[in-house]
Length: 392
Ligand SMILES: *[C@@H]1O[C@H](CO)[C@@H](O)[C@H](O)[C@H]1NC(C)=O
Ligand SMILES: *[C@@H]1O[C@H](CO)[C@@H](O)[C@H](O)[C@H]1NC(C)=O
Image (cartoon, rainbow, N blue to C red; front, side, top):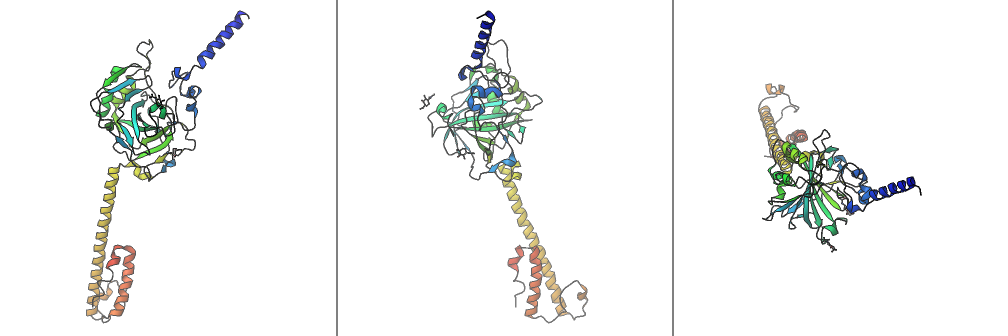
């Protein structure tokens, strides 16, 4: 074998070696050589048909009245034991104590960790993983739980269907600072490099969630990072959580995906996966009617009460008007009955026949006609109908 042939063989062996190392050794990224479009080459499940995140097209969702509010368990009972904050090179992770869990699903789930996904503040305005009608939020919080009723631990659960339940919270920016998020953001400067870890004071995890836990999107999906196991029952809340622009900027610019000892510092940005095809999956909603989606449950209650009061008020007004009309008509008739047929009252608009002595039978016929006309405009009056005329 000549030297050129040997060289080519060595090159081929080199590529062979670099192209297919064991999946555990692969350092995956969001862009570049092992970027998201290449994940499935190393992690086959990433090429599956039930992947996450997805775009929620609200007109394609299906209302499931059986979807009751999810209930965070022990989220506010954080105790005194500190939380661990960790930069794993892909995101910032807050490990959660095992007494925290999630109810409102067919099984009890135990909390494991939460983490964030964000963008880079560029013109793309991406950041969240899930999108709604094609629109991204600025960032997204995921609270990860495993099915502790069916499986002994996270590693056993994460590969199984219904093994995990993840809460997705879309984050947008506004004017006000969200103090709850500062319980995390204030400590990011201590874990700027990948693999750094720090203990932080425990805090109320529920304060990171939206107030309305009753309205959400539900679908079956996957982990949004390799190995992309298709084991997640997703709950994406309809209500978004707001942080300030300064808070988002801090999240977007403070962390590195590179390790402290690495010479080239790489900012940890745009750590969100693009939306994946639904492939015949259905996204269910816990709430109905398109128009109600704009309101929180408190607002809906207020609107319902308002509409009810309005209806009662309208009924009272209609009843008053009808009674007044009836009173004047009765008054008119009495007057006509008393006066002669040439009375000036006759020029008033009236479909009544010529005045006649007051007898019961024709009188009743007249009143029926009148009531029918009234009933066509006023339902509530129906019950009252016979009272004024039947008196002797
Ligand atoms: C999880 O549970 C499985 C099955 O019982 C067990 O084999 C495995 O060692 C456990 N893993 C951890 C990390 O505890
Ligand atoms: C998820 O998959 C399970 C098992 O196949 C099925 O029973 C359930 O209805 C699915 N849930 C949703 C929200 O599609």
